[in-house]
Image (cartoon, rainbow, N blue to C red):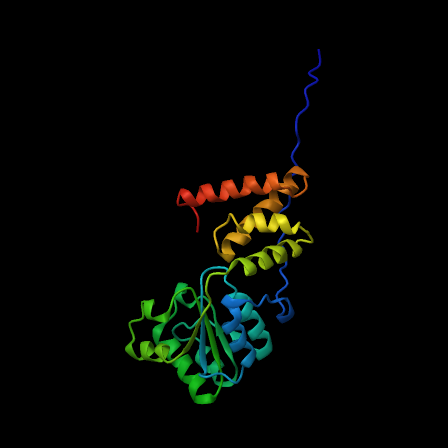
Length: 235
């Protein structure tokens, strides 16, 4: 007798990249980001030629850096011994992202900052930690970094997290009920990175199962995410 039992066939979603909207008009401006946005918008009228945005992963640093880079026609650099980054900084604005997590050359970064100061250009750096925590051996570079304008981006409040989650779903051409957004925000870690990971997982499971985004699905993802956090497996 033929087995009449049915088997659930899961759709395997393709890992297609979602292109986030990253223009100035798409930027969500709220308390934790306000000072950084104001400074980016003021360019080139900066209080110092070297500006640093400091904040946790997913806090909006890269979004702001892209906006500024396009507006200032900046060149992305990673200062390494013998490269042309200091020469680039003589004639145009330059951007150095993730400075505290990049193996840069102390002397070359010192030359870049000097070029910026001497030739009236600009340097924007992004990092997760303040420059005083970086393993910089060159005393002259430590002095230059202390003179930079540092703007710290704090953890998002609930209002900003709600806006971010709505935007992340909208980037995927998805709409979610406001009550569901509130449910997520009230039960998640207060960070941009957590919002990104949760939305990614919800979207993935909804596609895999061919289902709508429901409260039950969100509950499952939150339990999974919070369990990973409790086990110390989060980023």
